[in-house]
Length: 118
Image (tube, rainbow, N blue to C red; front, side):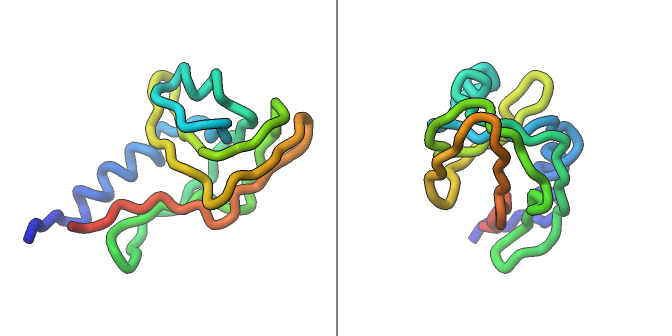
């Protein structure tokens, strides 16, 4: 069975904490930073990120649920993406698609980024 020390997982998660500048809700899964900007339906910044901390299966970050974002286009958000000034750092599907309307706000409750130990 493989072994990975939690410090290694924390290093990856800390890259997100240190460099993340924006979270976008997107109409589909983006493949790179420019694709995030094309598919973006809304933006949240600055980001309030807690962690890394222990989880049952590994290490986790939590996007603070008190953060709110601004919807910039009407559509169905299916994914989120976190970017820095030059990279797509992470993307994943939302727990459920969400209809959003331009000029409104959005919240992402219970958004966790978890790296699982092998």
